[in-house]
Each structure stands twice: as C-alpha cells, then as structure tokens.
Length: 389
Image 1 (spheres, one colour):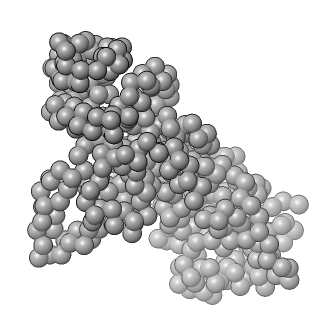
Image 2 (cartoon, rainbow, N blue to C red; image 1 turned 90 degrees about the vertical axis):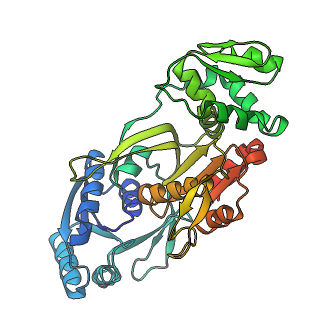
Image 3 (cartoon, rainbow, N blue to C red; image 1 turned 60 degrees about the vertical axis):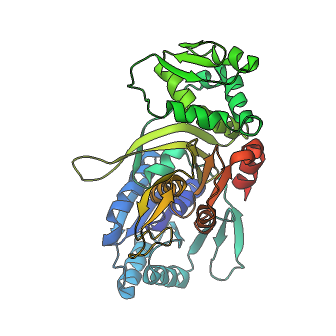
C-alpha cells in the first residue's frame, strides 16, 4: 500500500523534513498558503532531491472550511493508500482544519517535538505514543529549506592540524599570558589579505612560542621579541583565524554528525544581486543545527552610538556608546534567526572575556550560549553540554 504523507508548510520547515526522512513516504503533499509559497518551494526542492515524489496544494490560511475541503479531497483521492498528516506548523486555522478532517477519517496524525527529539502519534482510537526521531539532516539540507545555498566551506582541514600545536599554545596564553593576544590583535588589526608585505609584529620572548611560530609559512623571527610576516595566510591566522581553528578542532573531537568551517553561501531571492553570508562553524546532530560565531577582538571596545536598538533595550531618546560585543551578539542573532529557525542553537565564543553585563544578560534572554575568556579552557565540556541540552 502506497504511503501518502501530508505536511503543513510554515516558517519552520525542519519538522516537515524530519517526518519525510523518517517515514520515507511514497508521495509527499505540501499544504501551503499564499504566504508560504516561497517556503514551500525551498522545502519541495530539497525533498525532490532526496528522491521523493512531492507536490503542493494551496489552502486558505484563515478559512477553515476551505482547509477541511482540501484535506478531505486528498483523503478521498488516495482512498486506497495509507494517508498520514504531519500537524506541526501552519496557522491555527490550518492546524484545526486538517486535524479535524484527518482525525474524523481515522487517519494517522503526527506532531514533531524537536526539542525532546520525538514524534508524537495522535491517531484516533489509540493511546498517544512517542516515536524517537532517528534522522540526520545534513547541514546543506537544513540551510537549503531556509533558502540558503552553500557555495564553499573548508573541505580539507589538514592545514589546521599541521599547526594545531601553535593553535593550542595561543588558547593556553589566554590565562598564562593574558596580554599577548590583545597586543597581537592590536598590532595586526590594520592589515588584511590585501596588505603589502612584509609586516612586523612583536611576540613574547618564549622559546616554545618561537619554535612553533616559525613553522608557519612566511614567518621568521626578528630579534628576541619580534616576527616578520611575509605570507597572507599566516597573517590572517595570526590575526584571529587561529581561534576558529581551535574551536573547530574541539568541536570535531566530539564526533558530531557533520561539521563545517567557514560556510559561505547565498540566499535564494528574486533580487538581481543575491545577498551573501558566512558562518564560522556549523555542526549538526540528528535533526538540529548548531552555529558558533568565533571572535578574538576586544568585546568591550567602544564603537559608537546605538539608537532604538530593540535587542539591547534602546529607545528613541537614547544615544549611548556600545561595546563591540553587542554587535557580535546582534549579528549572530540576526543571521541565525533566518538560517536556523526555532530549532537550531547558537553560541558566541570569544577568546577574550565579555565584561559588559548587558551583553551577557541579553545573550541569556536570546538563548545564545556564551563561552569567553578563561572558560575557553573548558570549551570541550561546555560544547558537550550544549549539544546535549
């Protein structure tokens, strides 16, 4: 008997993709409103790429009779098939209408509880049961159903492990030599991958550091406490990429389902110039996506004024200087809201301590995990708890 699986398209497509991948139906029917046409197209594309037969039907968001009629027509059309409904998502009218039609016709109804990693079976005449979610949604598929297409990421991390000893050395200096990283950041801040070379910088008089740092391509010692940088990749590593690599290695040691570094891509739009974005680190576990933003700049450095900031409690009458840590948080929240939906999780990892209590409190309110300063030494344990929370 063929299995026909019906889903309500909403702003949160992951529950729909979850039941499709878990139950593997023969045909998927997406019920969309006119407001969800674009969302439905993203979801339909991913489902088709997985090899499923899929098509969409339109329902009226706030007309319960229309929703019931469309639902009953689907049930009648597939009278000789097993027809099931994923009730997760949609407007309240859409949910009520589809539930009434499917429940009255003794059809199986499912609700996805992503937070607790289970699918609830709400079928008529039977006791409610729980089905453990047993699917692994790839990072590319997760982002694709939200309209983001990956164009590149780090595919070969061999170079990261080639300089891992130096990376760990930098991480250790956060407590042993707290002024080293801030000083190095300050000296290298004006330069980027297009800056003329060579560039001079100062480093502590430490034999272990000297031994490790000269292994970087294009880096040589310059006296007792200086280096000369003649390679742009080494420059960017010393400027802050080392911290991304450190967090990446720690995350990889926890064996997530998938892990990607420097994820770049485009948002699918009808605009002539498609907007682009980049994510530092993304990892997946089951049907959830985790995003980590990595920063080495001073989070308390003042960067100007902020008016009427809905994230930080500003008003139209306020004009106060803010630390760059607030911008870090704002950027992460703004981007992750669009790419992760309700079911993804986000972390701000700062190599330097975030002292601003307003940022820490706002991070708590916005469900952004913070790891900073000396806590970097317990990053592995923090990450492990975060992934399983």
